[in-house]
Length: 111
Image (tube, rainbow, N blue to C red; front, side):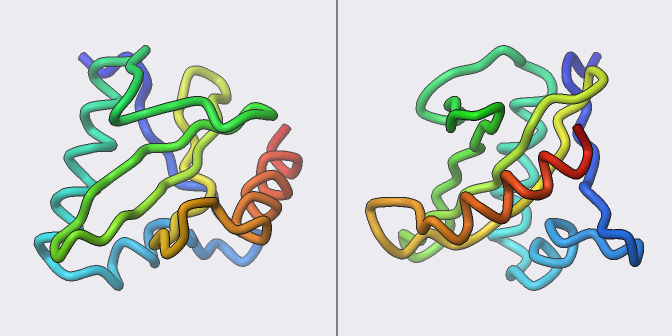
């Protein structure tokens, strides 16, 4: 049984940015990220190395993709669900401020 079911954040237009991002990944990478999200759903609360608090009500799912690439899915917890707010490929050690801001803005929209 899922302890923290995942739900996609939807823009006012109905578009779901994280779902769209996932569809843009290759099959193998989609499977990796999907399995990691599933592990969070079924094992919540779960910590490092898969999941960690990101501050200000945000959490991140940390995935290692094919060819050593790294991805992050930022989420919040609302109404007993993990709401997937934003996802990106990580290219630097530190998460870019624009990615963090975008996730925080989406969090504020649903709060």
